[in-house]
Image (spheres, rainbow, N blue to C red):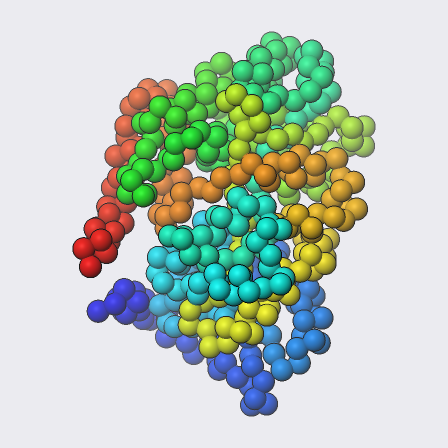
Amino acid sequence: MSRRLSRRDLLKGVAATAALASGCSRHRSGNIELRFWAVGREGEVAAELLTDFQQQHPQIELDIQKLPWTAAHEKLLTAYAGDTLPDVCQLGNTWVPEFAALRALHSLDELQQHSSTAIREDYFQGFFDSKSVSGALYGIPWYVDTRLLYYRRDLLAQAGFDAPPTTWDEWRRMLAAIKERVGEKRYSVLLPVNEFEPLLVLALQQPEEVLRDNGRYGNFRSADFRRAFSFYIEMFDREWAPRMSNTQISNVWDEFGNGFFSFYISGPWNIAEFLKRLPANLKDAWMTAPMPGPSGPGASSAGGASLVIFETSRHKEAAWMLIEYLSRPDIQQRFYELTGDMPPRRSSWKMPALEQSPYARAFHAQLDRVRSPPKVPEWERIAQEMRLAAERAIQRQMSIDEALAALDAKTDAILEKRRWILERVSHE
């Protein structure tokens, strides 16, 4: 019995409901009905973005479904179980390996290689590479996301520094100087203990992978990860960062404006939020900067979302036409205007809104220095275990060595099924 059939048996109740709701793939007119699922804000603007596509291709009728992020993953697994997946879908980058492992995604290598639109060399390479699993390309970047520093340039200047850090040692000196200046009830940096992303960014700046042996085992006791983990914990031990989650403060924008912290690691969506929420007198008091690394400008995470074609689609040619349309620089520029999502192509950045934004420049520089998180379906579970291990060390419930040993053990248990599958495949 195949894995697909086994999953269908497990979810047959919900799958039957999904199948009834899915409808047919062609209308009575004979036109192709192409189903496109998009998530979150992107789903809200998809219809507006695709108006011209529908006019240019009247033979293709688009059925656009918007999914909330909170329900999207479950909805996709249910559709997979019931053979009711759409033709084209927006997938978060960490979901691509999962659906590739299920053999649910159509390889895009040949389509991309013959495309005059989705030109590989025009993309920020780290994001394009993140869509490859076991040597096959399964997604085309739709928008990109990475993390870097937001900082209070005025408070940094008051502490004696005229530029943001480029190395960990420079950052240490700045964090120490700011803390000495602001006192006991304020801090140098906010690293919410309920978020794993800041620690992941530090780990991705190390040469070694966080999972070893082709993603079979945890590699958290390696010297590289221990170095990143120790630096992260040091920021709490020295009281440069508060032992707080982001739910324990009023909100990050107000507290950033109040000087509760001077550095914050976040993504591009917060440019618009800080511009909107900070008072006018602080307009020139903050800026963005690429992540500092152990010995120079550092890497960050390759996030964002991809456009994929599911293997079950009966309209792969039309599906690829849709992906090519959404990959055009002019459409990506329009997409940015509607959503604020940063485009994955260099040519798409040639627009005044991005070229003239002082806050976007750091992101443009960072996009050339990104690494993908581990490409295993279990990564999101492992990332949460990484966060929990860090929180135990932050709260001094475990030593660093104890936390990392426990994290490796938990990760190895999570990856047990993966090892079993890979072992079977290697003997076939």
